[in-house]
Image (tube, rainbow, N blue to C red):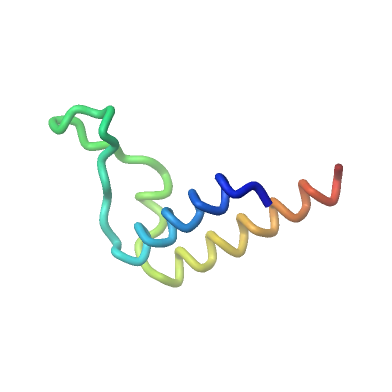
Length: 65
């Protein structure tokens, strides 16, 4: 799998484990960025489920090539 994608997935796992939100450096401090992952992934179990589903989607996409 693409190393860049793996690195991003690891970053998301770490964020989910901490159960915190990190603001992007390009977004002003006054604006809190909320996305769907922030709203859905609240626990370690949610993060694990998300990663399983993401891996399944990636495998299916690779199988269709």
